[in-house]
Each structure stands twice: as C-alpha cells, then as structure tokens.
Image 1: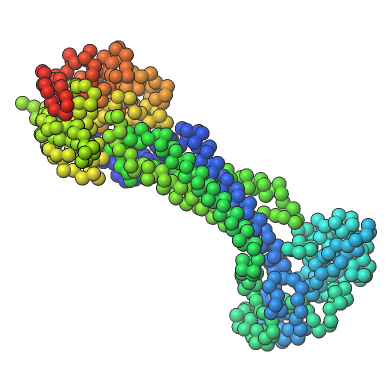
Image 2 (image 1 turned 45 degrees about the vertical axis):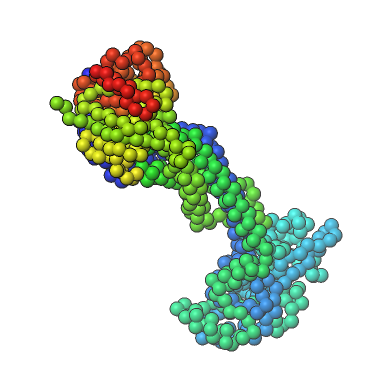
Length: 392
Length: 228
C-alpha cells in the first residue's frame, strides 16, 4: 500500500529554495549533455583565448612604451612639447637648472636619448636606442641587469646592452668591443627585456652618450625630477610648468595617460587589437548563444514537463542564468589556463603577453556577462514553451 | 456523499479563430468526486486530452466554468496557473517525461522542493516514495537505465509527491506491456481507493476499464456516455 506524504501540498517553496533547486537542475542538465557542454565551452574558450591573446599583446606593447617611466624611480618628467612617448627629443638644458632650483625638488637629472649604430664584426650595423644618464646616481639608467653592473657605466667608453640582442649585435659578451657611432666601446653589462617599440635600449654615461649622439651641451632629451619627501607634487608640477613653458611637465600617471592617449588616437594599434578582441567576443557570443538555444530545443520536452508540474518562467530564467554563469566560469578557467600556457610558450624579451590580475578578473566577469546575454535567445524560446505540449 | 473534486460545467474550447477555428470541446459537463477513479475514453481527436489539459491547468477553457476542490480556476490568470498546478495536480504522462539528467530520487525530489519541502526532507520523502512503488534499489538510477515500467512507476511516485489531491494520467499504460500496464493501473487505483486521491485517467486501453469506478466516453468534444 502506498501511504500519502506526511506533508500534503499546501504551500510553495520560497525564492531561495526554488533558486537552489533550479540551479541544481540546470547544472545537472548542463553536464548531462557532454557534447553540448563541450560546444558551449568551446565558444567561451575561443573568446577568452583570442581576447586575452590580443589584449595581452596590446598590454605588452603598452608596457614596452611605459617601462622606462615605471623603472626610472622618478616623480616628475620634463619632456619636450613635441614628444609623445619616451624617446629622442630636444629640450634646453635650462629646464634642468630650473628644476634644480624649484622649491620642493630634491634632485633633477638630465637624460639623453637617441639612436646609435652598432657596427657588426661581419659588416653591417644594428640600431640601438642609446640612453645617457648621469654618474653617480644613473637615474633613468639600466635596470633588470643580468650580467655586469650599473657601475660599469663609470668606466671609460663602456655601454650596457640588451642581453636578448647579443647575437643580433654580433655575439656580444662582457668585455666585447664594438664600434658605436664611429667610436670603440666596451660591453660592461647586459639587461634583459629592455626592448621598447623601437630598437633595444643601450645605456651609457651621460657624457659618453652626449659625445656618441653629438648632442650640444645645452640640449637634453628629458629631465627626471625627484621631489622632496612631503612636497606637494601638484604645486611643484605647476611651478615647473611655469618655469619651463616650452616643455610638458608630467607625473607618472599623466605621462602614462598621455602615452595611452597617443597610442589610441594617433596610431592604429588600439583599433587593430580592439577589433580582434571584439571579434573574439562576438564569435564566442554567437557560439554560446546557438549552443544554449540548441540545448533548450533538444530538451524542450523536459522544460515543458517542468512547466506542467508548476515551474514558472522565473524559475527557468534562474536555471538558464546559473547555466550561463557556470559556462562563463568554466570556459574562463579553461581559456585562461590555455592563455597562461601560451604566454609562457611565447614569452621572450621582444614579445611578452602582459596578463595582469585585473585582466583575469575582467575576463571572468566579461565571459559571465557574455554567456548571460547569449542565453537570451534560449530564454525567449523557453518562455514560449507551452506546458500543454507534454500531452501531445 | 463525497464532495466534488472536479466540477466542469459547459466548458468549451476552440483552437484558432475565424475560418480556421477548430472546436475541441463543445460544452462539456463533467464532475468527479473526491477519491473517485475515473477513466476518460474516446477516439483520437475527441477532446479528452484537451479536457485533461484544462483540468491540469495547462490550458484555459474558452468558456464555461471549471473548479478544483471548490476553487474556481476558470478565471485564473496565466501567472496563477503554475501555483494551481503545484497545489492541486499530480501528472502521469504517456511517456514518463522524467528529467534524463536527474536520478529517480532527484526527479521526485525536484517536485517536492517546489512544493515546499526542504532539500533534505525532499530526498527522504522521494526515497520513501520509490520504496512504495517498489523501486528501493533504483534511488540513484537515472531514467535512461530504467525499464519502461520502472520509469512509469517513478513518474507515478513523482505525481503523488507531496500528496496533490488530484492525479491526472494521460495514457499511462500506452507504452507498457500488459504486465507493467496492470501494475501501473493498480497503483493508480490504490491512490484513489486507499489514499483518497482523485484520479482521472485518459486511456484507450480497454484491458484496464474494469478497475475504474466510472468510465466517461467523450466524442466530438461532448460527453457521450457515463458508465459506472
């Protein structure tokens, strides 16, 4: 004999219970159809890999443009008005003197930057971006030194080169001698990964660089300013701008924003990478959208049954929402793991995918959002399911 | 005298409109007392499934009056229908219509949680119901691994989960062999006779007519015959 339930039907589950129930059913349905699961995840993974590969490369390129700023241990930069990124420029030496006498300034160091030719033993030559910084602090000088030392710059006619360019520069070693802009120079050290947009950085003592670049004594490329502890940075910047009207005065944030603006508005880099990223997201969206829709169509009878037994459209919306979030999370996880392996595989001094934590977080959130929006088509179909279909 | 569980008066249902309108029910009067076991028979297209759909609150009548246990559902709004289904109706479908990705226990538990059980008590109650229908060893089995008869028994356990007062079954034996068909029908009769559920079964299967309290014949959208 069948005995009745001890809890006859007289009430409905609360919203939280219904959500939990629908979440559980949604996830079970999702994992039941392995092929559909793979298809939908493929869409998310595709979007994650393509967008992260493109954005990572883009951020890597941005970093190349900003690495000098981030590693020069400086508070304020004075650069020529026409200069958009860190590079060669002409600024009167008076900017240096003005900075030194500005209240709130602890120190100011001039820096020279210019292109130099390295003559190769086999003939021909290679370009480097020569940076000249002042003894003894060498502010703006080499970082990421993997062989030799920064102090080597104080030795006569000594340069520090980029380690990853050693072969390109004719098999350089510590102590190797190369003719740079017509003058014999000795290798005093190597840095790693210091390759901006253009040729790799090579570092020299300020005076050596001035002679190699044939820069007049009254010219500098930029001036790096260190503020006194507790100094009002905004006030010092304003004062410097007044004193050196033919230059731009930036703190780190200003300078980076200016470079970003330049890259986005004056080059095609932003559009190129932005388009590819958008393409990845659109393709991912379409795949996820179609997969989820087809999954609903495949299980239409089950959804009809759920409706027939009293499940509401709100409940089914929650079911799809949970599935979307799960697809977004899982796909992000797989995609980010792939991207991370890819980044390791292609990492070099010349090209490095820059994948900061915020990009990882943004990827996960974007993928969840993408999946939630992509489920709209499935949801529209689901809402139209007639419970009466179960009797047909 | 038993109280009325189902009271249908002059119900009409027309599909479509204008020149393409198809009348499915043309003024049906149908009453079922609490605890009664009624079979609804008739040829294909006679309107019996339409009537069952209206009783199950998955379809609304074009006109007429329908009440379940005294609650008038004729004028219920679309948004109220799921609540009415949860409150009053247990369904047994021609094909079991179980959720393939859920185990037997979870298929029943799903209904129970929607009917206000906690997840834990739903699991316990679902296991008990499976035991009652002779499937104690199939608690963790998914529908794909059950025989046709076993699936239909799980579907019956799901239909009575939470003790809805009215059980509606649409051709519950159509996909079963004679032995399993008899078991399922007996199970439905037990629900009516021993637990007081009101059971309405739509069927063509004249092998099972003899166990009904009453057989209602419907043809061309009208009740033709009421046999006790």
